[in-house]
Length: 154
Image: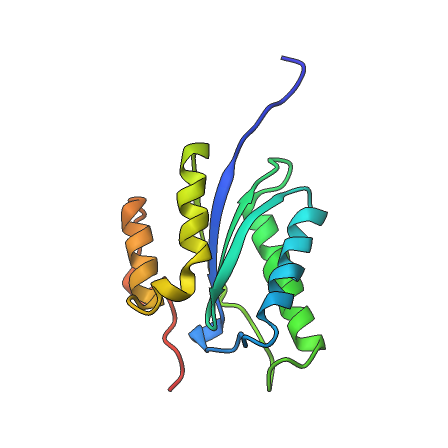
């Protein structure tokens, strides 16, 4: 074959360090636009983005020239810097070191996009921890509960 053809859809999930509720509704749309720009500038296609004050979900088409780990690292690093430069939070904003990344077929994209779009409704019934464990178990991902999500400071 002389050409490469791919279709890779990824649902990424990452949380604010220690799951602190730092993403404010006043600037969350700006954050989502910024993250969308990062994906586009790296050749990927944003399909859906949304989240809560302590975490973000992104659904995107991945160009295989860049690994999932690379693009997530770029998103988290660049967006942390962006948030801190604008002084949106008191102290220093950081994302938790880990992330979740799950692949879907094209036929599943509308349902996953709807799920992400309705995050705020979803979290009226379910905690982020319960949501994340459910996703891990649905994908058969082995995990250690001790390291899945750091508890928020109280």
